[in-house]
Image (cartoon, rainbow, N blue to C red; front, side, top):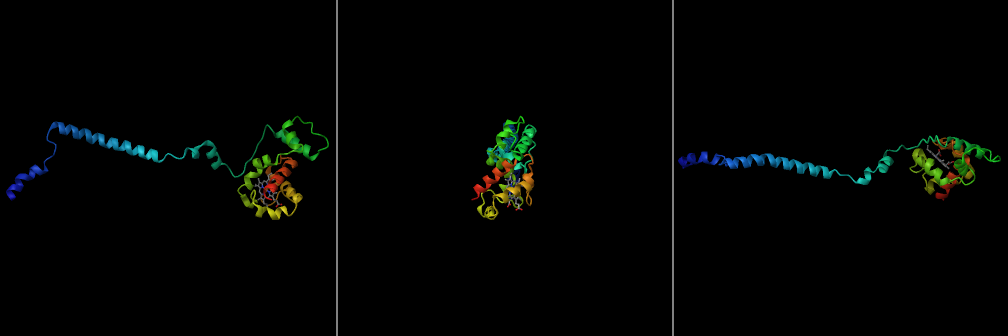
Length: 188
Ligand code: HEC
């Protein structure tokens, strides 16, 4: 038995590579198999991380990183806005300034929704700093109870964390009032 073992042992532990051809095969496989495995692994990882393309859309990114409030420095419309303010404060002499766009918004039909979406939305959409949320009836009811004039005055002069004219001195009073009307109408 022991004689048999000793005679077989070297045989058992001998390499299973017997011919040069087998050796070449093994060497090639030893090189190729890990490479293929790594390629497959890399592919799997890359495909795993592919995010929803909608999330990376420029608009979606801009939405996520946009500041809570906007500062609108409107160089093209600055003269127009000034003219609009003048026109609203002194409605008698129809503003003769060359600002057709501003006149359109200052004369009567100020677009409350547009003003809201441009300025007020920054705080009132999410309720920043205790601002009553847009369309939140419970939050608006007691404020509406104070009367529209009081609400207009709050925005024109500022209240709490809301700066006078919502921080946009270029806005005409008519635009502010239209925006208040729009917000109040949505919370009734
Ligand atoms: C910087 C953030 C901010 C912006 C921008 C803003 N508000 Fe406000 N607003 C507030 C906060 C905060 C309050 C609550 C103030 C309080 O009651 O102390 C408020 C309250 C109000 C009220 C209720 C006032 C009252 O008397 O109860 C009205 C109306 C209003 N905002 C209208 C507007 C309009 C219209 C605009 C856009 C032209 C605007 N807000 C923009 C922060 C903002």
